[in-house]
Image (cartoon, rainbow, N blue to C red):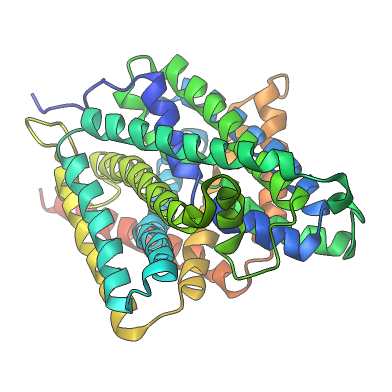
Length: 424
């Protein structure tokens, strides 16, 4: 009998993994960037996007009860439409996380250069170390990975709550006037940036087969994580605007200024440490969810079955993790050799993430009845994601190319199978 994924994740660990998947380095710079662009009105946008995130979370919570599978969102699309639809979404996701995760690691590593003036090769090395540590931990088993993630998230939340607490006494009402210094158009423009701060909820769903009680624990993890992330984002935006910790001294300065109110000049160093913690938590959670999704795709025959093998002792998708490590190395090498702009490199994976949300919400509209509140949540999220997706520019083509590659692979595979059946 082949080994199966081990059921060992609790709702506490699930909540930590979910927070880690969503709470990226954007929390360090976006409150100040959005405040600089839209003024105090940016706080309203953060509240609105937090509400939108609950629509996404509510829909995913309903879907995971219907299909608690390692396939995650690909399983929902497959159940709603047909097997090939889930496979095509899987191929779209194959072009997102393997590129997006190294970019996240590089973004976090770049914070070190603000303090140490590290060279580019040193920044790349730091990113590589974080990725390697995460891969090795996952190879050791999901229980160890989940425990490490829980510890890291506790440190992150403590540091962020502390920075908010020491900043609150310095908030003044005068900083919130005028509320719309640049008009509603500016507030609308920052909504796209803020949306990407709430991407990552889907990465917990492929871990459903490893929860003790997936039908209860996964939805609980999703809603607890959404509440924590929304609270941190909104409160950080509030103190950033209220203390006018934006528009000066570069991107990293905003949170550093907040922390320095309690930590003095060492606030910059605390911020750098916080950036590295957040970066590791994000890449760790994404690797966990994505590796299980790829394993499930191989198990279903949507990609080569070579990747559908688990470690006999640790019950982890060892071949998928090894392949991910190789791809991560190629992305880091390409960035180091050609100095590819991270923003440009991220546009494709970002479009793929939005496309995956659109497909998932469409599946929810098919699977859930209109009397189910999840259906209405899915409808609102579908409309919002479709509008945001329209602003992706040239990156709109990226998910289409990946989908075409997946369709071609399945077509070729079916052709070979028919020839073999005919011969037999």
